[in-house]
Image (tube, rainbow, N blue to C red):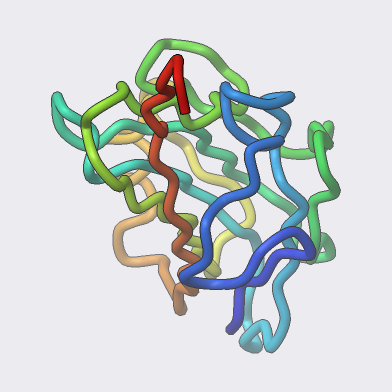
Length: 154
């Protein structure tokens, strides 16, 4: 399975429009070569380079097997959104602190052999527990972003 974006490629810098320095909207994503037996998908977007540990920016689960894309800024009405690290059930735009260096933002799409997860709560740890033993395959897409220091005179 492959996870791609119309907005950037694996290893590239995330365009500003998808960060807190821009519009803060979610990027367009699509996936292909889905394995047989897939019943649903889970998408986790996080920042493992966050100062306080991995920061969850977006977690979507129970994505129906028929869906193979998400458009820019789209909210999937037929899927569920778990809580991000700041307790929002929504896309949280990357916003690394100035001076914290280059951050690697990871999108991971999981193909599952079950249609619905039954997490105990809407947080990542419960989503991961519910997925255990049901992951057929996964695909990753990694982008980077760093807040640039702005100088007054040049």
